[in-house]
Length: 203
Image (cartoon, rainbow, N blue to C red):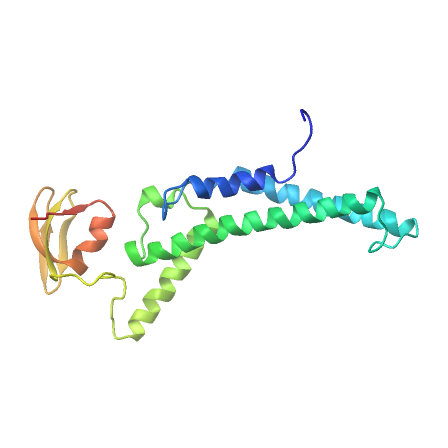
């Protein structure tokens, strides 16, 4: 089929990207492929409309006629629906991962994650995080993003991997210098651990 366009191939590639990614992990938003699928949708819609007008101009009933134009319309219609499903699956899957990030990293995305998001996804993350923060303020400051799994001990031993500096921890300031070791509340350390700035020392 050299030189022949295969309908739905680009949409299928988007879905394959999701399937090949590690569960819960984001790959860089594929702007180029995403826009190609949108352009293909526009072509299908245009061809569908032209065939519809052609049949109407010939006095044929679009619903009951079974000629080549009717089946051409059907192909473009089904191809358009399939591409739309692929686009929605791509966006929906990524949006769920982005929502989960709000619970793990707080309101600031690590740079290595942020560069993987499209501009609309960055705005979505900020909006979702703001809504979550607003709700927690209404709950008298209850932090719902920590201790997603009930800990055995509220304090953990951690090693600082990056020079974080002096940071307020509860009612005191703590110097989180690189390679220093501390006993911290899990709730204070979790965001740093997720960003790779701390590690928990077990045993």
